[in-house]
Length: 88
Image (cartoon, rainbow, N blue to C red; front, side, top):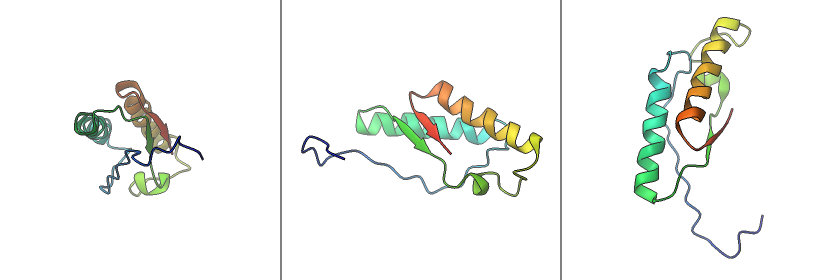
């Protein structure tokens, strides 16, 4: 991908595990982290990757509508309260 010669593309990695089934507890932590990165870099966070989705279920079942419903609610919350697109 061509970036116009700009080599200073900000990129942040947060290595802490999040539990997307924790209600909004970890989703709120993700929102707070995105806001902190924005303040530090002076640029909005535009993309958040959750890698991998199975690990973010923290023992939950990908076939369980309850577990997946909680995860989707958490990801939607992050999208709603940050300017970022989320990818899982």
